[in-house]
Length: 138
Image 1 (cartoon, one colour):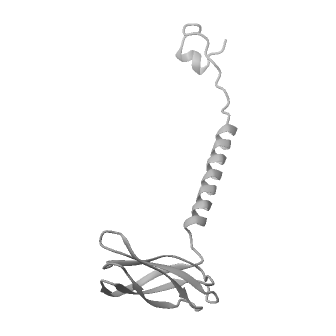
Image 2 (cartoon, rainbow, N blue to C red):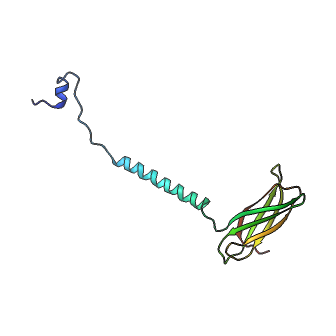
Image 3 (cartoon, rainbow, N blue to C red):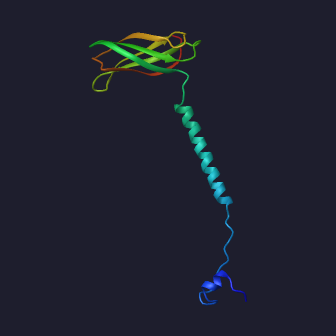
């Protein structure tokens, strides 16, 4: 009987039969990794569609002339220059209550600056343009 590394360390028969090492099965690990990567890509794609660049992106530039019954707002809409848009403009009071709401038409142009006087039911402290979309016929 030839002496191997295992028998040199441990006397034969003393600690029971030693198992031969099994070959590693790598295909389940690869399969699980592929499923995780595909799920990650699917989630990233969905989030990009939901929160990525939008067709109409409004941004308030400034607001001024705040009174108890109105507020002036200037905003820009990033959109295709050939499209018209309709944007919802909203004012809020110090308590967070909505005190003014209007739909404002945005003309064609690369990035038109829109100035609008929003009438309010109470003194506003801020104004926002939460959404814009294709121009609606009225």
